[in-house]
Image (tube, rainbow, N blue to C red; front, top):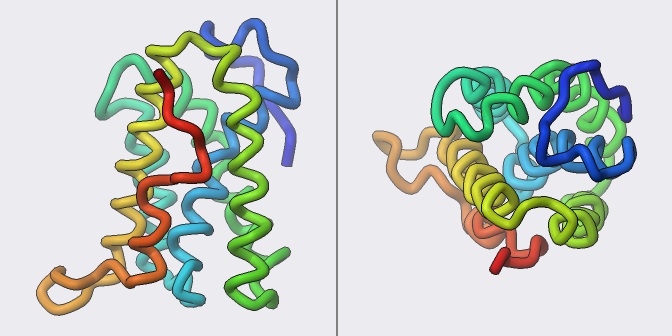
Length: 161
């Protein structure tokens, strides 16, 4: 899961390949954390996660187009592999592992331009909301479960000053 393409994000130039991979793969972990928090990562959530990462290569904040181009390259495959790896775990155990992965970002963000890191974190939060809202509910209302709601702020990632 650590394959990085020849494309690059200028703001990541000072990072190791492993650190770049952690940041680029964060949406995979966020999608599964949010979608699987209620122990039901359904097809709508999977579809929205895949669609949104791919869409953000060209739509949204131009500051992040290069980032999402990299994230989208292997997103579908990485998400499928992650789900296959952890789908048999209880939700609490899986959530703990996914949070642990996302917390690695806390050691990396201080090495990235603060404006870029803040923009990226805000983008991840909106991505989390899109995944959480994908499952419908009544006329699209009440579609975010209590378990999903608990993680939408991505509180495991330290705020950027």
